Length: 249
Image 1 (cartoon, helix red, strand yellow):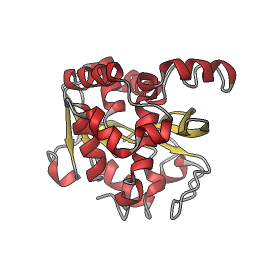
Image 2 (cartoon, helix red, strand yellow):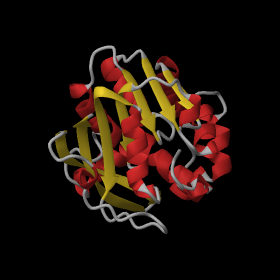
Image 3 (cartoon, one colour):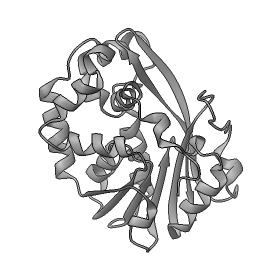
Image 4 (cartoon, one colour):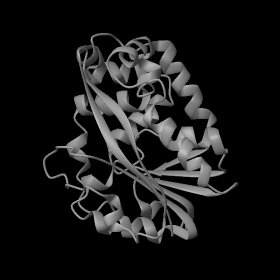
């Protein structure tokens, strides 16, 4: 389904922790982020996380009571934020990576701290995972109505009102096929949401400079850019910019 995306490329412990930080950094490093946002990055780049800003944009176009499918949803932060805004009765997250699904499960359980320590959290970020933050993440995820699957073959056959691919299509060897699969799962008149980083340099990643190249030019509802940072260590953060598009199918 993910068209030659190799999840093992993103399953090394350090990489898992970096993605965890991108999704949940405002919970895990709130004090550090407030300082960084005030001194190193434009206002709002960390005070309002990427997934929360994306969810706010999507909620504007998502129909009341509509269903949601997110492809490549990692540990579920975007799904959580969209659920908070829309109370969508059905949000399905498809994540091909076994390790990401395991991490999502651990965040919903009582042993997340042990799992993050085993991944090297202290070595990567210079401190242990804060237990209060993990409790808040657990409570938030357990409150949301989110189903996690490993492949589209596991989800129901009907089309979804909103289908989301955030920073995923550049990881596919055939982005056009991945997008075609997403369009097939989008109901007529539904919303297809995609984002893609600019100049994201990874081995085998695709150079995608404009998502609109893959879509009819007269169907997009919004095209903008969202910034975010990834903390690669206790003294290194990298600032990224993603194109963000919502189109109608």
